[in-house]
Length: 296
Image (cartoon, rainbow, N blue to C red; front, side):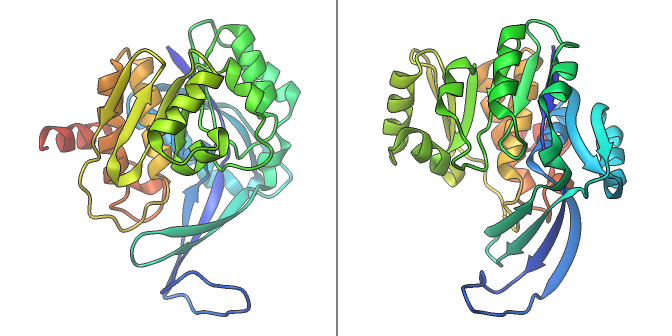
């Protein structure tokens, strides 16, 4: 089962700070480092490292050659990744000592994704293949629509959450992967159980994966309910942990794993990813993730 991921590719600039800057304030950064990132790229690498057959669709600028090479070196097919004249998207990340982060994203070339490019990619995939997407590129509702019409399983991680989200698109999704913030936006509720219940009532049959950070994650499709505890980790940077979870979860499904196995694998990988600096660079290999699972 193949995975087609429509998603962003960014260059992340990480600044280590004592606290997040506030209005009118100027602070100094202890260190600055440059890393590959973007929710789409992160999820493609995570899915590939988890053993998935991944194809990445999107756009980078000529300054993004290193991102193209990184995807290829991790086994991702980049035949649907276009190189254009616009600068590659980038993110400015403030990172506190606790591992928490604050992010500003410039979309750049990511914003050039269009319907023609989407159609060209989707028609190369078959019923039963997986279409994975996030919310850092345009045309999300169109991707969901034509992937659904193609018979692909649509798995949407609507992050970062914003007013571009069209809630009716959830009716065409097979899975939605969300955290509590995204769950509140989509449902109007704050408690995990109420988020699940509200979304299940609005979108019958939607398979919901709700991640809860240190509290683990839960799954519900209206009939089956599962929970998975978080794995212990010595977190230094939480950037990309959610992307790691999503990529590993999708790859596990594509390889025929059960939902329980997919949740467990994704949770272990996400925990490991918080122990390194940067997003894509911290995504663990499958053997490392399996070892963490076996040691707990």
